[in-house]
Image (tube, rainbow, N blue to C red; front, side, top):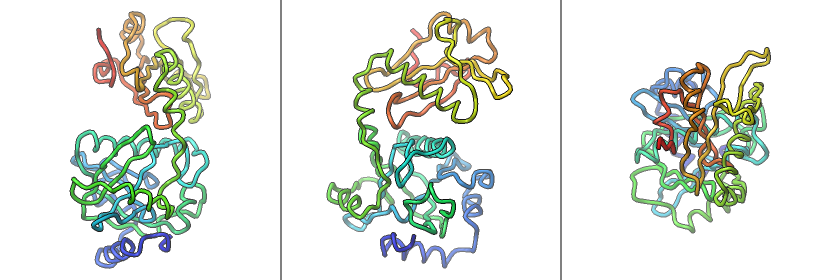
Length: 305
C-alpha cells in the first residue's frame, strides 16, 4: 500500500506515473520488449528482447540508504510467501523463475531493468489475498543491479543506480526495522547440507524433484533400485510416461557429479531420458534445470571424466 512506501520513493513513482502514458501493468511490460507479457501477467520477472531481464520492484520494499541510494532486500527463500507461510506450487515456480533471472544478471555482472509498483493492499498479503493486485506500475528509467547474493543468509541486495555502492549494515538493519523486507526463513537447512555427503545431496535432490513434479499433479515413481539408467519415471494422471529422469544434485562441498556408464548408455537409447540438475540441493534456495542428452556438457557441475 502507498502508506507503506518511503515518502521520497512514492513521490518518484507518482511523478513517473503522471508524466508517462496511461498503460495497464501488462502493457508496460509488453512495451519493454516482453512479447509474451499477456501470457505471464502474474510473473515477477521476465526475459525481454536482447536478453534483457526485467524485474518488478515493489515500492513497499524499497529503502533509502546513505547518500540517498535506493536498495531493497530480496529473499532467496522460494518456499515461503512474502508475508510468511508456505507458497503453493505455482508461487514457488514464479519465485524460482524470478531468482534464476536475477542470478543470471549477477553472474554476468549485468544490470536489469525494473518496473516499480505498489500493491492495493498491505504488501504482506501479496501472495495470500486474492485482492492483492498492482495499484501502480511504472517503468524505471534508472538501471538496477544485484549488488550481493548470499545463499547462506537466504538474501540478496538489489541496488538502483551505478555499481560501487552497497548499503551499510546500519542501512540494512534500518530496512529490517521498518519491516521493508520479505520474511526470510532461518538458514539452518542450508548450513546442514553444507556438511552433507554426496549420497545425502542426491537424496535431497530426489526429494526436491519428486515434490516438484507431484506439486503439478504428475506422478514421479522412483526406479533407482532397478539400476536401469534413470532415477524417476514421470507420468501424467492418465498413466502416460512423460520423462525418464536422472537426478543429480550439487551443494557446498559437493560441487560436481558424474554419470554412470548405465546412465550414459540410457541417454542414447531412451528418447524420454533427461538429466535434471538441482543446484543448492537440500537448501531453501534450491533450483533445477532439465537437460537433453545433447546438452549434458553444459550442465553446471558435470564432470565428464
